[in-house]
Length: 96
Length: 467
Image 1 (tube, chains in turn purple, brown):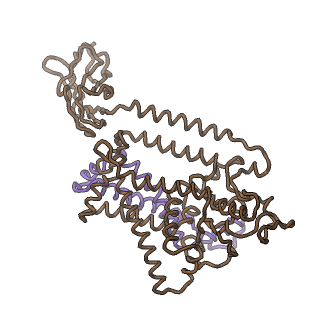
Image 2 (image 1 turned 60 degrees about the vertical axis):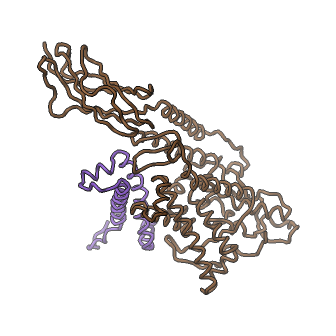
Image 3 (image 1 turned 90 degrees about the vertical axis):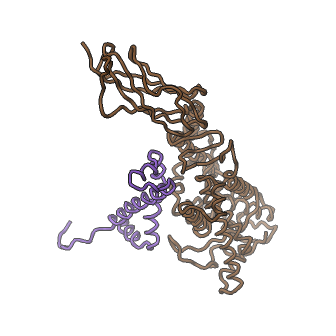
């Protein structure tokens, strides 16, 4: 089946490419999320609430961006993980 | 231009392990011609804009500054606040639509001439050529064993690239933090940790993308490259090789025109100049960024051969098949109408923008109080945000219930530019005039010296109903 070969090929992807497919989409989404989030919330006020009064705005934006990036990367990584085919059935005597 | 017989697809370049597949390093040959000139002009204009605009001052502030630390955006005479985010959204939608519009009309114009990836790759290639020499010299250098000379050349190339990248990173941060202050702190070695980080981060991204990744970004990473074909139709301008005229291709002596051959002399130059390393003669490919380098170089060859230009040219699928080319198609009309509408909306919105915002917050402790005089009292906090570029003095009034009175700080409220001021007010009304438990009232806030800065905001007045 062509689908199988495709999955097979995907799993032969070089490791670097797998890392990029996790980090790159999450980077794009994190950039968007950072803009949308900080339009509404002022990082300095959030810092006050979180008990970090010395946090500068630039620092807040940076932390926010990397937070979104890590979160997005986790989502991408899980997607990649769940796309792996399940292990084959142990009992093979069953017919379709 | 020398037409050296270099088979384009020969394994002349060292294969390096790259991110996506075994990548053969591409050495785009320098090209001259009409489109190269256009591309260079676009490059100079866009890079000039990027590196220059942040140094221009306007009315005592940086002309274009997305001042993140202060949460306000300056664009020449305008000042925008996070509350104006709507305009930014609109601007982004307009930009996306323009991209669709131009793609439908003329294909990947954006990719070939204006995309930062293309523009920075172009300037990095220019540095590379200045330091390592022509395409042939670069290939030779890469094949040569490492020695002092090669090390020197490579080291100076990377030094130039890195310096330029760091300057790019610095400029980038300069659009978000005032660049003059940034420059002063750079000279004093007192750049803040976050600023330093972003200069390095963006600098590294420039160095990596324009120096190393290059066409791989377009082929594997760019979302637009993946979906741009959806905007294409048979009337879209594409770069195409005229197969009917060119085939069968083959080499020949200059000035001759063998009868058994087409016009393509198979010199391979179109492949050598291609920044993504494709052969345009194989038809339209998604790797083609539409830079038109192959057009320039092929026109040059055709001229030398004494043939007609345009073996590779901007054309459309319909034109290639001898059909009529329609400029105005439903999608082009739709895109232009939407563009016109949104642009008009944006201009109208900015022209009638009220540089004042008022939020009304009811006192949370009590729904209402009763005064000694038997009046019902509601307490509100008005958050007055002055979005003007100058400090303003505001007056507050209220309407909605007969005989109502406004007490508290209601006159001559001075709010600095970009500041938010909490104004505590009390509203008194005679319960006899209350028709429902919750009446709608309207607060009016007006600036004394700017008639544009006035707004009305609805609030709720709660009280008992006397029957």
